[in-house]
Amino acid sequence: AQSVTQLDSQVPVFEEAPVELRCNYSSSVSVYLFWYVQYPNQGLQLLLKYLSGSTLVKGINGFEAEFNKSQTSFHLRKPSVHISDTAEYFCAVRGANAGGTSYGKLTFGQGTILTVHP
Amino acid sequence: EPEVTQTPSHQVTQMGQEVILRCVPISNHLYFYWYRQILGQKVEFLVSFYNNEISEKSEIFDDQFSVERPDGSNFTLKIRSTKLEDSAMYFCASTRGGSQPQHFGDGTRLSIL
Image (cartoon, rainbow over all chains, first blue to last red; front, side):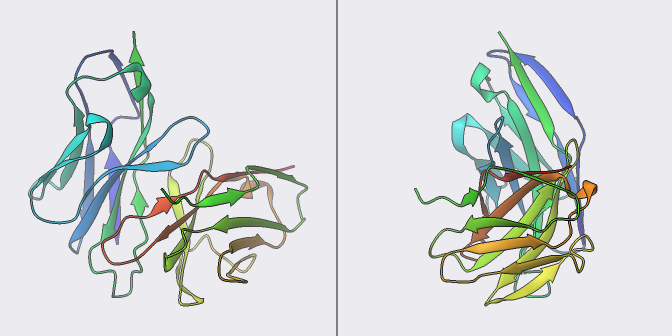
């Protein structure tokens, strides 16, 4: 079983400032990690994913995340945010061996609401 | 780019009534999922479906819930006798499998009165 903790429920920042949204996970097996974004009245859109290889992954809209296995973290960063980045961000994890008893279900964190102020 | 589509976007139903939420997954995807998000809470896994059968379900997915893929394109979630606590946003997702990420629809907001 996996669990995900997003340490900040709300993060307010000013436009063009850097931002980091924190995510920690726990799992007894190897995992794949994802960040999704949810704009108001919309579904979940994939921002980026970590499957294997380089621990720094880049996604859409200038976001990136770094997988840290020793700290079981997958923090999301953006060097300069825009007003349009205002949304809720979800970190999610699934077991990497989806051919076993888990058919790839995602376990989500509580979400972090990012509000970008002018 | 192909999308997962869900209908209706908003469903209002009286408690005790049956409701069917509909989803059209991406056409070449093989694994299908339902999740729900109660207002202010986490997105929670309900059920996964592969090869025309349920592959995994959560504790939430009790006997009042069922899923079906009635034809080659639709994937439905039925709630037989709705309760107030079933009010939530329900998301459908699909993936080709392996390490591929899940693609989500825009959700159906279910309101039970």
